[in-house]
Image 1 (cartoon, rainbow, N blue to C red):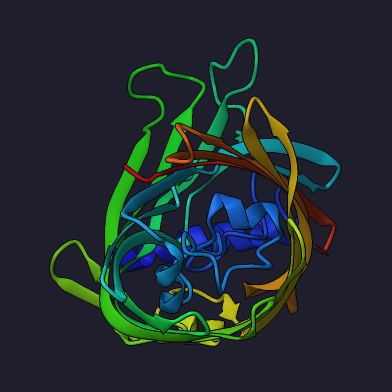
Image 2 (spheres, one colour):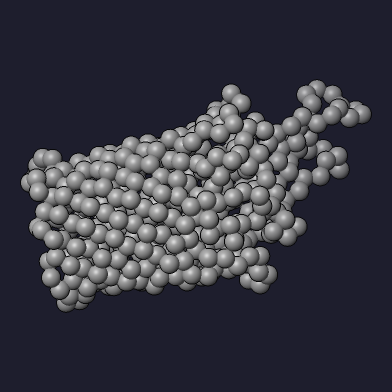
Length: 386
């Protein structure tokens, strides 16, 4: 079976489960090309994403690289614990993600940064079990057939960026983005009756790979010491989906994005932020195989980051935020939105050279045709300045 045919089957099954026509695992957040984690650092996730345009560890605005201060590395682990209820049946699943790695080095008024972040994660599994009609010679319990549809992988953004900041009130940046990744897809049929020659299990595997290029740029302005204004954009270059290393399945473009930010730091020890973000998700339709439809989406977030108290000589940061955004795909004629509340803590170690950030995000996603979905995302990030 070709990757195109197998992927079409996966999309159809996921769509059927999401719209409530099958009693099995499924969800409404990872259809099509997948779920967008947001390309946010653990620190910013705790504030609801409200500081993404000025956060040095979030690879959205390349101008934010100027805030690194010294050579450093950041990496994080973000497992998602998802609950889906369909037709009165509730399923709990866990998706493990390592969505972000970024490193930067300042050189005079410039800062160079290299990041690897997940743009779209397409990891999910659906199992459908049905009872087979009795056959001659059957005794005991009836035989069952289980069909497993599994998708792992996604599309990642490898960005080389540079920021320039010669004055305290201005920083500008630009980056080159390489979009790469693989999606491994599987369809497997197994039977409870393992009598040789009676039923014939089957397994179909295939791999879709992606490759493309884009560019990003941004700016941060500080008209007064306590106010920051920031904005950035990404242009989506051409990307190709291939089966294995040869057959081209689709040619398309990575979605463009644009974002804006305002942050206020006029209260000692307190930062307040608000951000808007637009994603041209409809460009994913050029890469899609199947009947799902992508639609452009707008998102917003607000949050705060507070120097709360000192513990053993360490200044502890507490964060709180929330927001709402549109996910890429339309299900049963409804675009899926995600509303979230989040909180987090930041703890410095080693005289400030190491920071441990922990954030928890509670997500609620739009209900469609009897299917409800929610999730907890716990993010643990480690930032090191050697």
